[in-house]
Image (cartoon, rainbow, N blue to C red; front, side):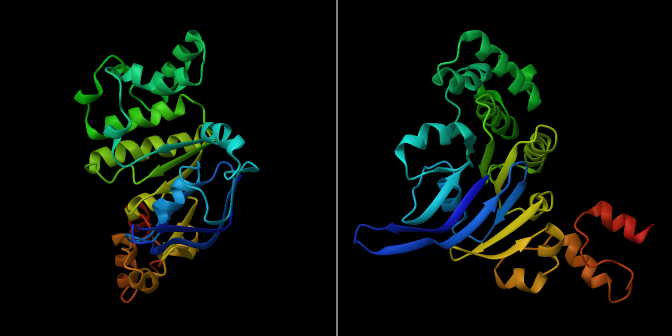
Length: 274
C-alpha cells in the first residue's frame, strides 16, 4: 500500500521565494488498484508522482511505500525497486542500441545473473507485446512502441507499483491506444498497481478511481462515473469531460431514460439501442 500523509512540497526559486506545489495532501493507494490523477497544468500532479519513488522528498508530511518512509535514506534502494516510473518522453529513458539491451539495463544494474536477465527481458517484452521487435534499434520505433519499451524496462525489474507521468502526452491516438491497452493488461491480468497521471479523459474512464487535483490539493475523488457526472464542477476546475458523458446529459432533456453517467461509446449505444 502507498500511504501519503499530509504531504506538502514547496519549491524555492533563485530569489528565495516559495511556491507550494502540493498542499497538505493525504491519499491511500491499495495494491492492485488502477488510480488516475487528473488536474490542469500547475495542479501539482507531477510533483505528487515524483514523491512516489522518492525523486522528490516531502517538505512536510510523510510518504510510505509498503510501510517504508521515503525520508529514510536507508529505504531508497528498496523503494525504487518497488515503484517504477515512466515519463512523458520515452526517448529520455531509452539508452541502448537495441530494444532487448534497453530492457536489460535495469536488471543488469540490480546485479542479476545473465540467465535471470534473459528470462526477465523476454517475459517483459512479451507482456507489452513487442517481443518481435527485440533486435530493433529504439530509434526506428513509433512513439507508442518506444513507450512500451520504456514500460518493459520497468516491468523487467518486477516493481509492485507503476507510476506513469503523462506517458501518452506526446503520442498520436493509435500510440495512446497501444500504451493504454498495455497498462490495462498489466493491471487486470498481472495485478500491477497503476498510478497514471494524464489529462486525457478517455484514459481516466478506464480507472478504478479518479483523483482530481487543483492548487496542490485533492478536490474530487471517486469512481469515474461519480467524478465525470459532475460536469459543472469539472469545468470550473478547467477540465474537460468525456464527450459522450456531456452528450448523455444533453440527450436526457429529450430522452429521460438515458443515464447521466455514461462514459463510453459502447455504453451510449446500449442505452440508445437496448
